Image 1 (spheres, rainbow, N blue to C red):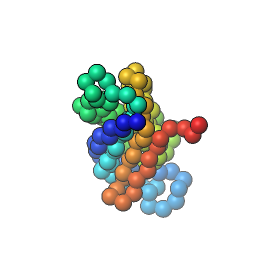
Image 2: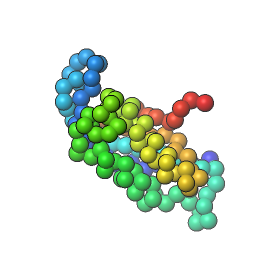
Image 3: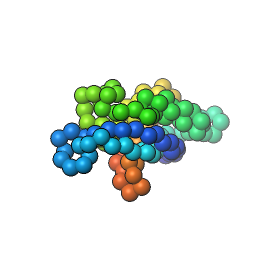
Image 4: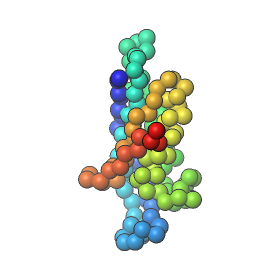
Length: 125
């Protein structure tokens, strides 16, 4: 099995409702996102995917989040914009693109600080 990972970043503000503490106040992060895709076979060029393609797909998702107040941005108007939910949003967006290429998203990791991260790898089977 092959796995390719790209790393991108975006800045955004959010507040988390009903969790208690400082995070219920508006605050921001410089989020770092790692997107990993996997496949058992390589394409004709000997690649799982061109890094440029995976970066482009990731950018197309992150532009919806970058420099935004996430609580006012779909789909987070109706759910807490936690790092967990952000990872799932990115995962779902990349999965839509990757499935057309017969590639699976293995994991999306969202770092909200240098020492705090969350990963989402799809629903448990």
